Image (cartoon, rainbow, N blue to C red; front, top):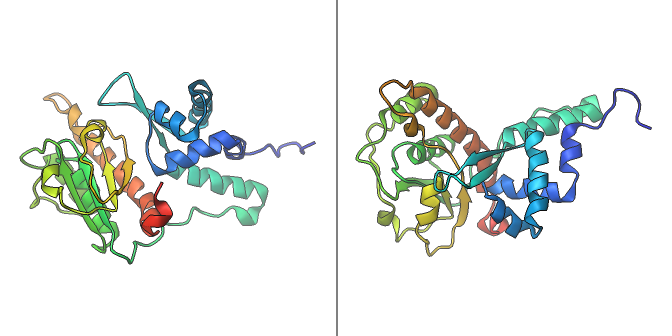
Length: 257
């Protein structure tokens, strides 16, 4: 019998189940809808939904309504919370194992090309492009584009990057996905649900990743203090990019699904 006060950490209890571990590993790579997770793990939808509900209850997984189809939703793994939960579990086993989550791996030394795509290429994707370039000191090829690009970047996106991350993108302009049809990419990362449905099929067979992020510009209005939405979006993208870096440091063969 386990001694009093030494209960199993919640993370261990949640992650130890084989199907929940499989769901965690799938969501570590990309946001997915339930039906996509069903296909990837090869289990009935009711069983997958049950275990996703437990992971949500444990705070490891979140869900957002799709901007493409409001009847649908995307599941997302909170990697930062998982890192802390894993560290806490180690400390519960032995004080010497209560490590702090390690920083992401350095940027890749081999040539790597990344495309960030969203609809307007005015907020989410240019912020992601700028943040990845910043974290890698320009050592990888990174660009962004949109399926229906706006004339200019949203001023709040420019301001959020400048004030909170020290990055200036004011001189850049949105571009269309069609302009990149002949480019080779190792990763194509879609940041909105609508563009995921229409993103071109790049012939280089890149690794496809989806980050289901709400459009911060959707809060625009004369009576809305919408700037904080851009600050929040930039912060979430920055977190996702920090956890993307170890993946980029691996070879394409290692990460191809």
